[in-house]
Image (cartoon, rainbow, N blue to C red; front, side, top):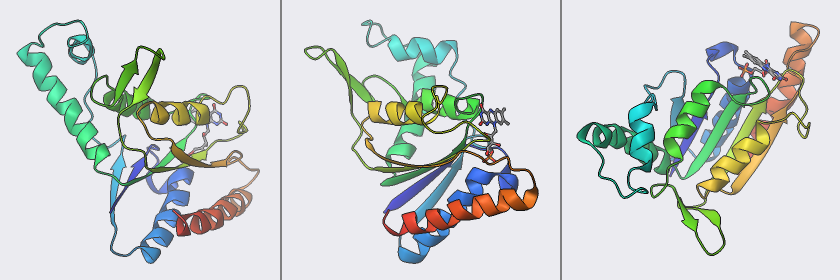
Length: 206
Ligand SMILES: Cc1cc2nc3c(=O)[nH]c(=O)nc-3n(C[C@H](O)[C@H](O)[C@H](O)COP(=O)(O)O)c2cc1C
């Protein structure tokens, strides 16, 4: 059993979302000592850049074209990322809101994972996308300074739910800490502590 923790903050020990996620993982590990926990920080991982070569490689088979050798090599890297992601039986994603959405490196990672034929297909009768990955639990731990969950400008939670659903992962649960910027360090820590407690409880049934 593999739990993959995708960490989307670059702030290391100063990251609120990572702090909450670490408490979640500690509680999870206590309950499931034999499970493997893998950590993938999207800011540290050497992700494919997803530029011209990858964008052309993505559409080549749909357009009935042969990929060039360069595109094939680039696509092998993309498939490596998909394989690693797909090895996970459960996924924990901790992520700060950046400008009402997600940090650019997480978007880069998602741009690697969401691929026709590899992770989603298209149902021409229903005219809709079909996720090709097996469904599995996805726990989101999201942090923001002030943008409330459900705000019309919340492009973080709905986007993450949608995009993982698009590749087949629909068992999504979310914990949202919306007010991480408090008037003092002590108040911020007290605020975080309540989510740390919630994370420990949540981990018990994950
Ligand atoms: C580049 C950047 C953009 C941000 N944009 C928003 C935002 O749109 N709304 C919000 O409420 N907080 C925003 N924040 C604040 C972070 O979401 C907040 O501090 C979060 O708790 C940080 O989580 P972390 O410590 O895990 O990185 C932004 C922070 C940064 C660095």
